[in-house]
Every structure is written in C-alpha cells, then in structure tokens.
Image (spheres, rainbow, N blue to C red):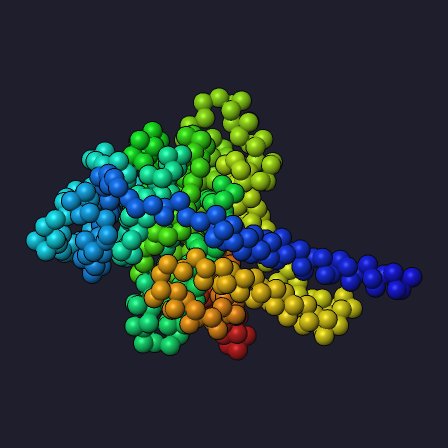
Length: 472
C-alpha cells in the first residue's frame, strides 16, 4: 500500500510540474521548427522581381521624438523602395520638444521624400486616426519614431501584399537595434538589453511565425504594421479607450472584417532598446493592462460591433474551440495563458518551499526544479535554431544573433522576471485607471514603502505613548 501511495503521489507531483511547460512551451517550440522547415521547402512567393510599385503611406506618431526621428526618416530614405512613391505623415501628438525642427531639417535633406506634418489631439489613437483620414496610397504602414527600418522592409511588405491578394494586413518583425545594444556601457544594462533582443527575436521570428500559420496572432504590433487602405478604412479605426489600440484594431480585423492577420518575417524594424529595469516594468504592465482592456471590450460586447445578443452568444461559443482559428478561441487561449494560468503558477512557486513538509525529499524538489529549468532551456534553444534559419537573408543580424547563443540559457530566468511584472500589471489594473503613464518599479517601490510605513507607524506611535505613560 505504501508503494501505491508513493507512486500515486509521485505521478501527481510530476504531472503538476511538467504539464504547463510541456503544453505551453515545448509543443509550440517544435511547431515553430516544423513551420520553418515547411517554409524553407516550399520556398518564398516573393522570389520574382517586383515590376509594379504602388504608392504607399507611412504614418509615424511623433511625441517628444527629436532624438530619434531623423534616423527613422533616414532609414526610409535609404530603403530600396522608390522614394517618389512614399508619402510620410508625421502626426504630432502634443509633445513639447523640437521634433518640428527635425521635420524641417529632414525636408531639406531628403527632397525626394514627401513628408507632411499634422497636429493632432493628445492620445496616440487620435493621432493615428487623423493620419488615416489624410492618408493616400494603396498600402498604409505604421511605424514608431524611435526606430529604423531595415532597408528591404518596405519592399518585402509590398511584395508580399502584391503576390498575395488575400492578405489584407500584416505585422512586421520588431527587433531591438543591436548596434545601440552594443553601445551600452553599463554591464547590467547591457545584459538586460541583450536578453531583450533575444526575447523579441523569439517572440516575432519564432512565436508569431507559428501563430501566423494557425491564425493565432493576437496583436498587430503598433510599432510596425501594414494594411491595405481598403481594409483598414472599413474598420472602426483605432479605439481611444484603451492603451492597446493595436490589439483592439487586430480584433476588429479578425472579428468584424473576417480577415486573417499575417506576419511578414522578412520585413524588420529595429526599435530603440529598453532604457532599464524601470522602463521594462512600466512597458510590460502597460501591455498587460491593454490586453485585459481589449479582452473586456470584446467579451462583454461594450463598444464592440456586434449588434445582437445572438451574434455575441455565437462569438462566445466560438471561444470554446481553443483552436485559435477563430478570434474567440484565440482570445480565450490568450487569457488562459496570460491571466488564468498566472495565478496557479504563482501558487506553485510559493508552494515549492512547502513541499518539504509533505514528505518530499529536498533532492527530489531540487531535481524537479532543475528539470523544469532544463526544459525551458531546451525550448529556448529550439527557438534559437529556428530563428537562425529565419535570419538567413540578413547576414549582420544573423551573425549578431548567433553570437548571443550563450545567453539563450538565461532567457528562462528573464522570462520568469517578466512573468512577475505582468502579474503585477494584472493586480494593478484592478484598482488604477487606464493611462499611458504607468508607475515604474522605483516609483511603485517608494509608494509601497510609504504605505507600509504608514501602517506600522500607528501601533508604534501608541506604543510610545503607552511607554511614556507607564514610565511617568
């Protein structure tokens, strides 16, 4: 009987610890490798030389962007796409720096580019919507002002659109600018930025490639996305009531317009690396809040283009498929992974120290933790190998990515840290109002410290009064 109890407890122990990383990490990693092999065997549909170049419009929101705007426009000027077919709309979002002077300078230095300046109301969504109403061209491309385009990115996007009439919208690949990463002098920040580069490469070149094949992309990244103008103007444009307007528009495309969202894996945008741990903390909490806001809008039907209760019921019913082939299933899958599973994972982390009191040996506990970490490392290297294949067209990027191979083993630790930041974002979203400005780690730590001081100062004050009375 003791043997049966031991085996039963061991099975429960191993299943509880292995099932989540196995289903949510290992299986998608193998899937991404298989999709890479499939794409390599089938070849690229953009092999033929482009013979027709349509006009395109690039929209760039500008908010205190004077330090990065010129390099962003310079990358467009250096692109392989014909300059005279590019119209650039700089949408000023009520910043307070000298971005307008940079705009004037770029007009003089790049006369072949048609660059226009628009003043918009405060809020990124309002700025983007204003630009959309003033846009011209067959394709609309959104990029952020704090990065630069790889020289073939525009050509590869347009070529993918022209060769695939069924594609209406795409997200490009976003990587952090590896040249800026390597200019970092402080060792701790350099490590953080290198890990962030690896994280972005894994998320876009492996994860979203896998999601694109299964129609499971959750967000058209606002930093680099592209649309047929005829498609985006049929939507309700960017929503002003959420900090994740790009995610909200993605679900409009998938649910209202019934269109797939694709990834253009050979169109790369290099964004500015993270400034530090405080900026990472604010950024990931903002992403987490936005995801919750958009999910709430669509699941409850508020401000969502479903006219009848029957349609909304049908949408919710689709959530049960869990296949991701429909927007509803995709939403539930994402909520389960990012939110519902977050709290059991948190409980398991805290419960780890309690297992020793349930007759589990220390060796078994340490071995299981090591095995879980090893599984995550194996997963990271599977992604790493597949991403090397995706970067075969970009020699410099590929060489840099290969050089970071030793740091791939640290990605599970980095992702573990990000998990706690996102969990904090879930908790903070409960009692704080939606805002683009979110407290960073230092500000939140100071607030917690002040709150604890206020709580414990009251009994300490009464203790001093009591001690004074007794001594008196």
